[in-house]
Image 1: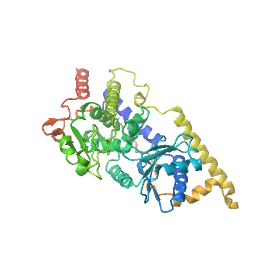
Image 2: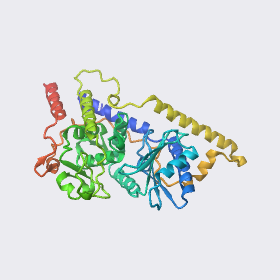
Image 3: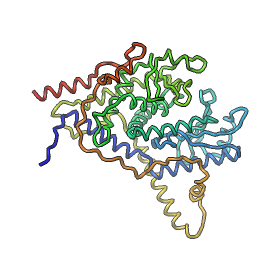
Image 4: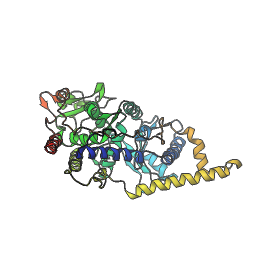
Length: 421
């Protein structure tokens, strides 16, 4: 009989958490129906814009372009054109006249650092953010896609964290939360500066361990007052005093200071004034998962989901996805029945005009199934300081910005020793 390595209780729970994240990722990944419906929303909005300004060009960026969108995520669009003054109010009026938005959902944020028009599509309840002449949005999406190739675990981590922030209303910059772009850059920095070869088996990382350590870093260890984040050139932490010298107009770096990888003088996190609330939420999640992972020996391991302790998918989201699937199924049936007669419907028109819709470039592969991991014995979640090279890289101007001690690591090791005795 083959030898089966002994797994300690916390290792079993870490394995379970990893599997739950894998399942959550597969479930929340965009379906064909969601992708199709979003493309139709873009098509409707693009028609209104290009009818008003024939020379304008509409581009998709953000999570819809990268494929990292949740069922509740906005669609980010940028309109490229030539105007003396940004036509925010003109576009608002066009949407009102064409009756494409939910009543009272149109908001013009003309005082924001990046002025946008926000609306909710009337047919689908999908939210849309529209900006003007922000060309870096498309470039940023391409940059993220490159990092996804480098860090295949990135989407799984991002999906959980986006849902975590969304259900706590911490995902909108204009209310002080963290934007998706900032969150993704934080994840990239974490993966760059947080090598964990000890939790790899058959080429796959234990995402549960990474999630806990992400919460530990940004909830307990990271010094938001003194430290800024850079992902360029392999990534590093920067002293904010040094960063200020490079900031636009000498502005003081924000509490969440993230250097724009495409424009180093720009601080991506400058509008996230509620980042300390986010920090507290991350710390709570770390402590909550820690309790679950370190349940006493003999605990009934066949219990509720570990991941559900920190995130949940609401019923209305599940029902909305089911409605979309049914809607697309009915459309396909009608399209098949009338296809031979050459008759035209709104749905077939939208489909035939898909070539005119701004290219998304990487529609998610909805048949993708992450490789199933074998049972593994990940080491206990270790401190960030265990790797000497890693620790020295986090000391900026003599300040050690990360703790040299991890309660999780120590508690796990003590538990192992006590069980051996």
